[in-house]
Amino acid sequence: MRKRKRDAQALLPPAVQIAAIIVLAIFVLIPIAYTLLLSVTPDTEIGGASLIPSHWAFGNYLQMWSTVSLAQGLSNSLIIAGVASVIAVILAVGAAYIITRFAFRGRRPYLYSLVGLQAVPSVMLLLPLFVLFASIQAALHFRLVGTYEAMIITYLTFALPFATWLMVSYLGSIPIDLEEAALCDGATRLQALLRVIVPLALPGMVVALVFAFLTGWNDVLFASVLTSPETRTLAVQLQAFSSAQEGGALPLYGQLMGAAVVSAVPVVILYMIFQRYLIGGLTAGGVKG
Amino acid sequence: MSTIQPLRETVPAPTMVLRPERGRRGIFGGRPMWLIWPSIFLLVVIIGIPLLIAIYISFLNLDQYTLRSWISAPWVGLANYVTALTNGGVVGASALASLGVSLAFSLLTTLLITPIGIVAALTVNTQYRGRTLVRSLYLVPYVIPTFVTALVWRQMFLNGTGPVDRFLAMIHVANINTYWLLGPNSFWAMVIADVWASWAFIYIMVLAGLQSISQEAYEAADVDGANAWQKLTRVILPQLRHILGLALLLSTLYHFNNFTLPFVMFGTPPPIQADVLPLNIYVSSFQLFNFGLGGAMSVITLILMLIPGFVYLRALRLGEVTKL
Image (tube, rainbow over all chains, first blue to last red; front, side, top):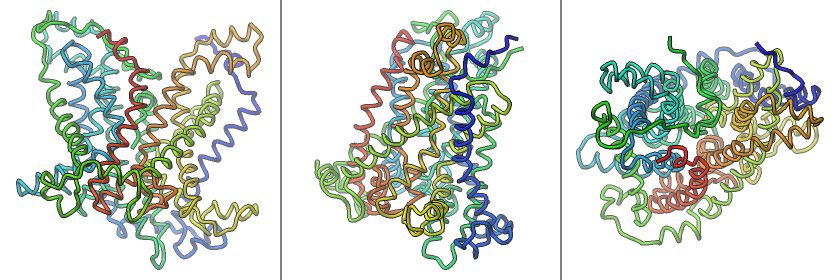
């Protein structure tokens, strides 16, 4: 293996480089450290003279489960974001396969609309979706607003265009020769797709799945209007918990921060595991909930 | 054995397409067009129709009482647009003022994160022990969910007890009881929190761009006797022009549409100085129940978004790449 010459690529003098890393690391770590510190500070000592509490209140991490219905929020978020992202990726693979393999009327408008739809402000879709759901439920006499189904449909509005766009760029990079070989051997189109393309596209599908999942997990906007107390997602529960702390007798900031840590850690771990693949997805759309 | 390749770390102006088969039947029989129909159907039902409804609503006088029969709600023409552009709601700023806040917020944030992102990318572009750790660390604020970022910075900026006020009081710059979540400072609190959360986006894009620059370019510059500064400004940055342009555009769009950060950080109604357009639309529609006004503001936002959207589409050059 060719050893990279360090000098040629170095653009920053070593001292500047080290200083920049240290400054950035401090900038990144201060709010994180404060969050962790606050999450183990007893409620009575928040706002005291010293930032460091007299004892560690690890109990915050136990109490918060009964103060907020965190477990319910976690499972709601998992179900809604999970189902929506799986549906989005399955539909996206099918659509992307057609787009990258065949010429058909409307192919280019379809591609343009995929990009264009990502510029549509989400708040613009929330209102008509709400109106649509409300009038469907008035006309057909069944509840839609506040159900899992309504939330899953809603999350598809941004998961589907994004996942399709990612899969189009991914399937486009898979050489057509491979499936042609399969087709020559007598495979049907569907077999070629399932046995040849899907296994090759798996990393791209994982990226699309993770991103679609996280946009759902991170969403506050749609969930704050379209969920009922039983289907409330983690993000909305935390937001409500946070605003309930204002004007109260003793703000439970320790538990609030504990809950914040619990909602962030799985996401950070997920990113770190898939880091290698996800960087590609991050640059793809800049989509982040 | 099929090797699973990671996604290329470049901007995927999709390197499509091979050879789309023309005509109704390819060499290998019929085209399985049914694979795309569910997607098209869903896109029309969940995005196309709602978009049309949004535009229709913007011409109606629609509130929580007329919502039940919204199709027959009174038609008011452009009245909502006039209201949106002239005066605000009972609480909060007018759409025009919010537009100013949103523009200032998205442009300023993008301007601030660009140099940070470039410097950060340069610090991990050489090989050294611990580089992987530094790269992971840089990503952490970016991958933390926005609602958590907002909760964290809300605590950071709490008046009197938050670390920001404590620090400023310690170095005798400001009173310990400076308000960051109310009044004019709230704009800056929002900018700082957003810079913290989003600079890694520029970092990722620049790093992807740096990795596509060949080693030879650096070495050639060395041979020519360029110093580090010349190498950066004459060799590296010109090659990053396109990816950086794309990054700035996407970043501005994303910040403009950021709803979660101000919503969770300030609650509703937000301080006027932090009343960004998406938040204003949300409050007008779902707290004041003036759906028509919210719709009008949405349409105004969409028209504004289409301008950079077209620039983005042109930059991607779909048509030329795909030869269609």
